[in-house]
Image (cartoon, rainbow, N blue to C red):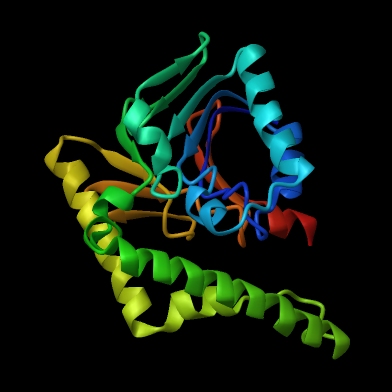
Length: 247
């Protein structure tokens, strides 16, 4: 399948829970004129604690570079977990790979989108980094518990995957409030800057919706949900759920 543009975020290469093999399968089956990596592609935070760099993680990097060599325009938007790149930006590698903090995207229908990872609009990440790091470790704990709970569920004959971390994100009041505030602040910024839409990642929740007059689009993640945001050659926007395709 070939798309005009593919947007992916929060791959978290270098961590135990990165779904690198699934992401490789996705890249093999989908081509695009543009590939936007919307932050947290390499997880510098986690790698400071312990590096978990398996061969598929290197394969992902090589596959992206190969796509750039073969004609895909690749844009790497930095996030908080790969903030170690920010002191050196912008970085231009060859003719078709650019690393930067933010970007503009003009959709086929002429609508102008602001592309950002989203951490600049997260008050915790920007003002209380110690708390963000603590939350990151807590998220890792929930991912560990996911594995244990789903192992028990399988032993009981329940095959369908269930995510404790996703449940917390979607149902705990403070978490829901944080996500709503994040989306609203980002949409207001985009509107103030004269954009029609915003494309982001950061909160690991793929979604497309209108917030006032702004088209809010989040590409999700490749830790749990394995999702991508795409614009087709006809200008239609879709979220691809790779896990749903596997089931």
